[in-house]
Amino acid sequence: MRFLDDRRPSHDLTYDDVFMVPRRSTVSSRYDVDLTTHDGTGATLPLVVANMTAIAGKRMAETVARRGGIVVVPQDIPIPVVTDVVSWVKRRHLVFDTCIELSPTQTVAEALSLIPKRAHRCAVVVEDGRPLGVLTLADCAEVDRFAQARDVMRPAEVTISADTDPRSAFDLLDASRAPVAVGVDGDGRLVGVLTRTGALRATLYEPAVDSTGGLRIAAAVGVNGDVADKAARLLEAGVDCLVVDTAHGHQDRMLEALAAVRALSPSVPVAAGNVVSAEGTRDLIEAGADIVKVGVGPGAMCTTRMMTGVGRPQFSAVLECAAAARELGKHVWADGGVRHPRDVALALAAGASSVMIGSWFAGTHESPGDLVEDSSGRSYKASFGMASARAVANRTSADSAYDRARKGLYEEGISSSRMYLDPARPGVEDLIDEICSGVRSSCTYAGARSLEEFHERALVGVQSAAGFTEGRPLATSW
Ligand SMILES: NC(=O)C1=CN([C@@H]2O[C@H](COP(=O)(O)OP(=O)(O)OC[C@H]3O[C@@H](n4cnc5c(N)ncnc54)[C@H](OP(=O)(O)O)[C@@H]3O)[C@@H](O)[C@H]2O)C=CC1
Ligand SMILES: Nc1nc2c(ncn2[C@@H]2O[C@H](COP(=O)(O)O)[C@@H](O)[C@H]2O)c(=O)[nH]1
Ligand SMILES: [K+]
Image 1 (cartoon, helix red, strand yellow):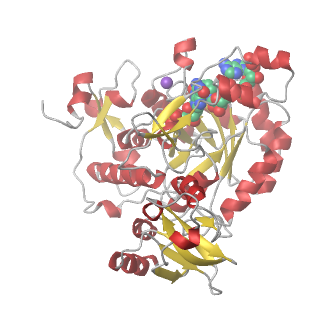
Image 2 (image 1 turned 120 degrees about the vertical axis):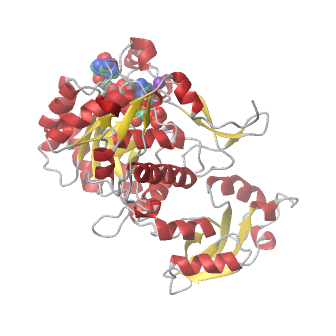
Image 3 (image 1 turned 135 degrees about the horizontal axis):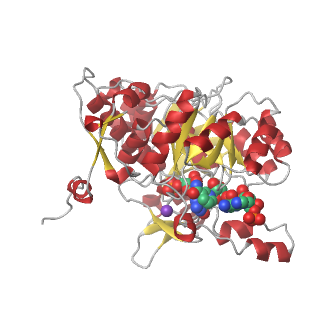
């Protein structure tokens, strides 16, 4: 990456402060751009979902890995639960979504509480593992809440073998009025469902899979307690990347935790953070990190900068840390503060191998929380930061009352935030589509076919607040 006219600014910058200048290009299609990251995580997209309890659950993990990204399960989840989640995610189908299954006698009331948990907006009525029909929200409208699924369901108009190629599935769905294709195995047992858009996506994205063909997933450990034991159990569970995470990553306890993890000789990459300086990056790499997580204070749920004055504008932090990591043959993830596809593109231009996203994905069907409606009928999910009073209370629930009270005094995150679903993009895959379109297009403007070429060719300038505002679209007239 170069600054325009080699004018490197004397002050630090964040994403909104910068823009990219188009360059002469030989890339004639956005589909010619390869978004694979080469940081050893095996992701085919440069997207990592942040280890936040309100965001990174098993449904998110399945959905994101199917499109090529990777989800980090938070350190606050008990390890036996993480073990179950890892094995569940690895058993998911690579094309079909896992769907909600209802027995024929379950009620419409139950269906209505379950269907909003899936972006494909339906459930499958199943008997002895075989699909009987499909139930959508429309089928449940104006029906007695105690009516049974078998009396309200519609027949599965498109039932296909789970090894049907996605392009044929797309054509079948396009020619029908069915909301989903129901996928079955050779014995006619339910495998999952596929929407028309899902079939399209299956032709465009490549799932992030391990050597045995299971979807990839990462998990985090903190720096407290017996880090080596927790890390060993997560590796045993089969995680594809281990993340050692604490607010202030450039501290002795982190360096000791990394040494303990490295002593296990993990065969998967180890990520660690957070830091915002070249010195911090080098120290973490020297202690054993393959990937350094960069970002102090940019997160949407984060109050660190207001509480402490500590942090660093994220674009400069990523640029400096990525350069330091590259000198040592290692990588950085740009963690936090990403709200638009442009922010992802700029972090990659600055040299990040991947971009970590939390809150943006909180307001989607796939985040773990229940969908709630506000007084005006808009749907949202509740979210919270991992250093918020809510998360600290959860993390310290086994401590004595005194210790909990002591720890409860330190809060650096928001405990309750409403993340509204975008009606046009209510699923995480809709957001991934939007991000990938933006980033592919950024790469072609820079004349790059890969993320490495993008970093090499990106030409970045500094803009005023008015420059940023000029780039925003206008919803109504002046
Ligand atoms: N990227 C960011 O800007 C930030 C991210 N977070 C996220 O919140 C989650 C919880 O992190 P964390 O609070 O580190 O929790 P941890 O459970 O990992 O605990 C951190 C430990 O380090 C000690 N510590 C020393 N200095 C600090 C410091 N400046 N901030 C916090 N702890 C410190 C604490 O001891 P003692 O309590 O005795 O001081 C505590 O025992 C993580 O997921 C982290 O990534 C949190 C804040 C900022
Ligand atoms: N200071 C705090 N930082 C937090 C907290 N919870 C999470 N985080 C950090 O934010 C990113 C995600 O950023 P986002 O803008 O995409 O939401 C996450 O990975 C952490 O580094 C918190 O409570 N306090
Ligand atoms: K913030």
